[in-house]
Image (tube, rainbow, N blue to C red; front, side, top):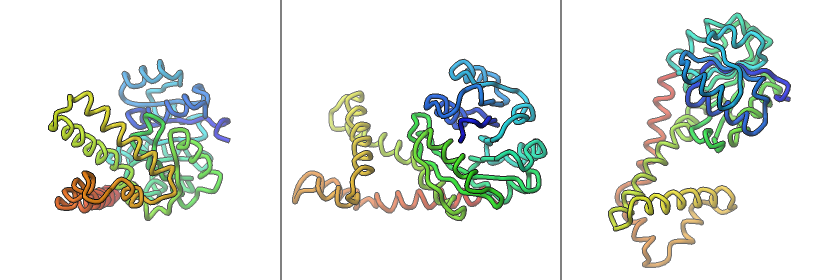
Length: 270
């Protein structure tokens, strides 16, 4: 269904640009059906050259003929941007927001009465079409609206639908999660260098280890715990390393990082 829709992107920065590129590369939407607006001229011109989408410097012009309006702006400015073009959206256009922490009820109040809103949380791997995205429906969005949103985010990865009360949890886990993974990867690379590998070799081995392990976990019917146990032989190298991680509260640190990110997401929405 989304192939027949015109889409306006309000914001064409990192995540907005990633979603646009994913929609075009996957041939989910013809580039001429997409119009992007952004205050940064360089971002718009680069995006237009790479993808062939339409560009507009004015948000109102961008949404004029759109069926779907996707807000890819920072949470701090979401209210002012939404209010500025709220009357242009009305009830006929589907509004999708990826502003972290901003609830659908707030967005509905900033737009026209009866506005159809879907809230989404993609993550950074959308840039390589491997996003983990979650979506939830506002009070006026129907099943067709959810299906259209899923088609958009499926173009850049994998999408699930959740209750809105869980969106802060999604933000803390998969929204912030790539940064935690990159920190772990950086530590693995540094560890490789510290035991004698050159940095290029350490990066290749660490990145492929992380990628292969994640793919194996996703495709396997076994739990991560079972997969871990298959590598851990009695008195071997792996159990020695795992003991060190447990001594340093690695598991608790990860759980704490996600919990703290969730709390910050809730703060942003207040």
